[in-house]
Each structure stands twice: as C-alpha cells, then as structure tokens.
Image (cartoon, rainbow, N blue to C red; front, top):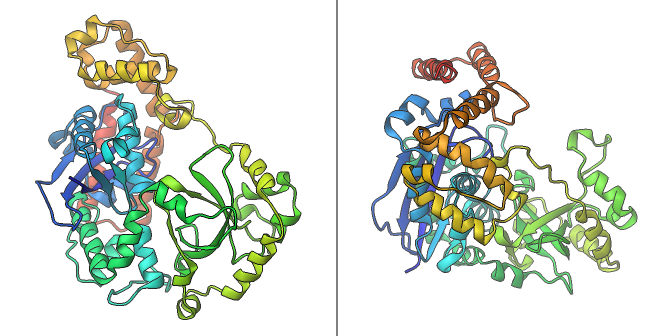
Length: 475
C-alpha cells in the first residue's frame, strides 16, 4: 500500500553533517492525506561528544538534559525512524525536508552503519518535499489561500507564517509533532484548492517523470520554482536546459532566461568557472551572477510548462516574457554543451577530514553493507568477541566512535583512552571539525545575553546548556 510519511526533525544546530538531531516526529497518511496509525515522537540523547548550539536550543526550547532524560540513544533513535521510512510503498515527505531533514536522516543512518540511501527508493519508496509546491501555488494559483509577507513586503514561505495566515492550528512552532501536523494541513489546503497542481507536483518525485519534461534536443524553456530565485519573483524563473552535468547523471545545467546570457556565449570555460564560484559579495560593482543553475532530477524539482505562466501572472511576478524569449533565441543559435560540461567537470566539493562528515565521498560497497548489518545486530558480548573489518576506511574510522557511544563497557583500556583523547580534541580544537567548541559556546552565550532580551524560560535554557557543557570534560 502506498502511503506518505510526514516528518520533521529538531536539531542541535543548522548543519546536518555536523549537528545532531534532538527530536523527531512522524505521522503516516494515505495518499488522500488521512492519518493512519499512531505518530512516532521521540527525543535523541546527545552522546558525550555532542555540543548543542545555543541558538538551536533557544528556538526549540529543548535542552540536552531533557533529551537525556526522555530520549533514545542515537542508535535506537535512528533504528525506529528507519523502520518507518523503509516500510514498502512509503513516500517520505515534509516541509523543506529535501534540503535539511533528509540530510539529517542520511547522516544519522551513515553514522550508525546503515546504507544512507536505500530507504529512499527500495520497495517502491520515494521522497518528496512540499515547500516548492507551496511556492508554485503562490506564484501561479494563489486563489483561495492567504499568503503572508515579511515585514519588508517580501513573500514569506515560513511554515509558521502560512499557518497563522490561514487559521491552521500550529500552537508550538519548532516542536516536531506540531510542525508535522501543520505541514499536513498546508498540503491538504493546496490539494483541496488546486488538486490538479498538487497531483502534477506529487508526480515529480519520480526522476523519470522529471526527465520526461526536459527537452535537451530542442532546448524548450520551462517554468522552474526554486529558493535560488528571489522571493519577489515568486521564487520563479523561466529556464532553458542546456546540457547534462558531466559527472552527476542526475543533474541538468539550466540557464535563467531573465538574465542576459551574453557572458555565457562569449566567455571561456575557465572564466565562467571562476565567476560561477565567486561569492556574490566579491563580484565587481554592477556585475550580476551568471544565470546558471543545476536542476537535480532526483530532488523533486518543480518544473512546469511555460504555458501556465499567463501574462497576468508574469506581470505579478515581474517576469518579462518577451525578454526571456529574446534570450532564448540568443541561446538557440549557439551550442554551449561542451563548454558548460567543461565548467562543471571540475568539482567545487571540499571533502571533510572527519569520516562522519564524508557521506558524499562515495557509496558503500556491498561487502561493507553486510558487515555493517552484522555490526548493528551484534550484542555487547559479540562486539567484544568479533572482528568487524571494512574495506572502506571511513567505516573503519567510525567503528570506535560507534562502540564508545553505544557500548562503552566493551572498550579496551587502549580504546577508551583513544576515545577520550579524540573527544577532548573534538570539543576544544576549532580545527577538529565539530560544529561548535566549548570556547565558542561560551562566547555565543555571552553574546546572546548581551544582545537579546530573554524570557525567564530562555534564560534557564542557557543555564542548563552551560551546566551540560561544563560536565562534558569532567566525565
């Protein structure tokens, strides 16, 4: 049976590769968005090498003491989540999940010796994210829904702003379960008001369906929705596909037709690459960013025919259709495939020295997956009595940490000392790769107290965090 598993994480920080989950909530629905089964709500105990960021604790109100008292170990936490997400026929979905929550899941699975990707595709499974569907609805079919703005007038797509504007109950924003209920309610609102649009975007969780929309032979323009485009344009742009990515076979290089493509036509591949990876603040005065972007077929991109962008919508979104047509004609007269593939051939990926942050350095081998499964099933006694040999150096390096966090009683004296030495470095050395060090934590807390007016509850959160941090090196 096909079902959707709506979920949300709260975390100890904003970087999934470095910052751990603190809370998870998930609710299963059928494809008509009727809830089926009981929700899963759980906290995750921070292991003794985890240092929460104070900003995250203030947003969620979750302290490490609360998670330690009420939570599961990360091994048990991700085991329970994996059981739900890997149920056959499951589409895992949420609000901004592709860019954040799915990354939290992948890194948590990887740290705990699971294949980080299988649950996304095996047994008819898929993943989805409704945030770009919300953006598309506001851009093209806004009728019947109240659309909030930020104080400066720019469109807001924050979940808590959408729920307030539309009278949707969302009493505890940044509580995982409350956020999940709110996300389902927003999805129901769009499904009710714009069922055809909802169904079209739901189908685009299949990369085959996405690929069928992209015409690289005739280079037909498409309307694309992305957070990379300005909110004042409805996060919308008319783009033209120009070439497949030379390395990532799930990525297509596209050009935003609102921007003059002359530099792409005239500049060398080397010059384009240099400009492409220059930070916006480092561009010369008056210089605009190159209008190149990647569309990832396997990340549920929102693409539609440009026929849906009528003149009234284009005017409202400040999209000049005539100018886009002119730029398309310019690009139609040249073939930039070879040049652009040369641009993207060179990787801008900076590997991390920390094995637990090296998720994207390569896929796991089948033999290592089998060893990993044996490791996950091992009792403490078996951990002491068996060897777990991996071909992948990342997994070999992660093994001691896995044992120390979950079964410290099985460590030899030498392993225990190695763990303690590593943990001290991790918590204190800015070069070690952690999201935050003890010194930086103290500095941030002092800065927050100086610059913000805190409620009594927020003040207590910071006191609890200081108390937790002080105990880490004592243990």
